[in-house]
Image (tube, rainbow, N blue to C red):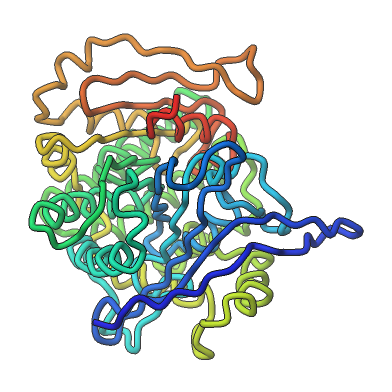
Length: 439
């Protein structure tokens, strides 16, 4: 396997707003790892940048985006938690204030990561986890200074499903001494852990928020039960198709509710399910394209690409996201609740966090699969009362609730949709500090 290619420098971007040549200094590095023959994964590391503590005193967080096919190096970095926003202006709630952050374009074919052929794309989370073990082994071998630093995996959406599988394989790899790192826990944000539980609760959630009437509830519930039946019969590719059809039923009955935040208008043109477009075209438009908005695409294929200096000429950022989703469609609706159970049984610290206004992975559905866990501590956890957390951006208001027992915790983030750091940045940063035991 090829050794770790590392490129290091200072983050010195000129802000795009007129007359504001400000800079944000932060040590960073990036590079590629060949995880398989014909499969090349890109990573981008920002060292923690805190005025009172060095990066050695702060944890390392790996961020995994959803999709599958969403770019963490692009969307997670410039839209959510990186040091700069999409306009290259400093982000006040960047996570590098509390941790070093490792973005990975995962799985291969996503963002700047690429494959030499479509046959090298991943088809399930087991394959994704195997690729990530190669990257992590190479990363920690090449950056030995991080081997003893507490390492956490944070995730969003389908990234949570990948994170669960990766965390389990990493636990095994550490035991076998194949990877040397101080793995401290995994955090599953608005995560696609139990797809059926999410889809089945869309109707009740929308109905309770006055976004569905009685007839709409019947139609959405009927479509959702068709998804459930396909999953129960092991017809997972068909279940993915029915999932997209259910989304169309939701759109038709809600006048186009935004799946990522029910209180925010969806700026993207709606795509109705037709014979001409097909369900894959519809779901890519709803879920892949929003991560590749024109301004972000221009940034990633322009100044950022030039700065990095290592992106092959034949690789266009974001251009392969649709192919990644298509390759994974047979795995998309498979649950991984059993993997979370295995993590808890192994003593891994597991955190679940969810946005109050998220529809695609609504909190009701998250709570349902949590109640199905076989974890021995569940009865006690279920009887615990949650604790209110003040919103750092508005101290007089409640920003979230949380409760924890032993190695499991749950955060209910208020006034946030699917992309919690985008909607409630200060609250997300506070949660990060709590999960990583800084508060």
